[in-house]
Length: 178
Image (tube, rainbow, N blue to C red; front, side, top):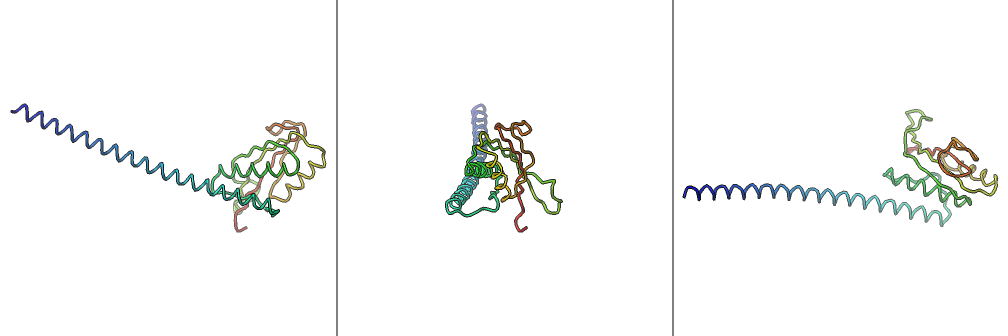
């Protein structure tokens, strides 16, 4: 009987250990599932926000309303996509086909620290343009927005993007309430 009791106690202890480890695993998996759902919910909200912003931009374009600045989202990746899409549409409206590269937003060294203006570097490579008048019209249109042309090359390689006409710009993100 002594051996039977030891085997029963050992088996009971083994069952308790397995149950204890199983409960911990289940709690950990439930936590991962909950975190995944929260992340999915946040991503869904961000996507919904960007879609509403895109619809608003499309509505403004159709109705002919003029934007004074490019709308910004609360997501840096969404801001890059909005900026690239805006500049591409802006140039196509002028009859220019271009490749646009957008870098991340950073603090601008062109303004004092008190103002806290950020800048977004842009590189544009225009493949074909009909005339220099078209280029001048593009540069004048840039003046309607907080863009600053840093480098403009025709046939040069100073700006690392493909195209015959290459432009490096800064877009200034002006803080709200200024």
